[in-house]
Image (cartoon, helix red, strand yellow):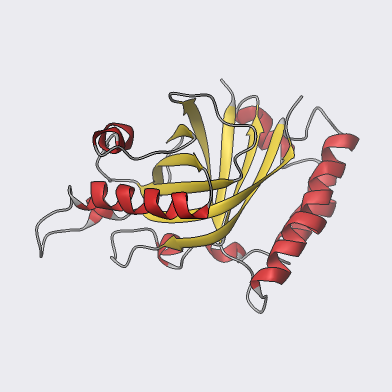
Length: 226
């Protein structure tokens, strides 16, 4: 089973969004590509960055603190299995080049990284759509099928992938949608929020069931795979 690791986080302190995006893509992204070229057996099988454009963060204490800080990015890295993922982070190249660079653009104290099993649903993932919506649902959230809810209201999107955590962690599932632009992503975000809020507990009850974070992002497929 292919493992898809996702890193959810915000930029390092003292950086503008433009500075963060530039370092993430042009500096760190280049290092990852160098890693793949130098050691293809240890490097990731695929590598995608998603740079945040807009979003919503939960304001209740049931959500993981890192999600309540708001997200600036989601990075996605694919490996053959969990053992390959672990081994990739123990090589000399990773420890000498990649690990030291992470704190230069990431708030490392509050980043969340977890492995997921991915399941494309419906139409294949589009090759050209660049704008995505992530719905990040924490552990303890209701297992609501957003696809069913969106179909019921006629919501539109270009592609969808369901991501389910395969190891214990603060995030249970991530709904990943490709859309036809930012306006479509914002409309879809509202549909998703309404669907999840419709299942929220009554006023005064614990809010764990609706503690989702939302991120509209631009996708950069820096290494499409081999």
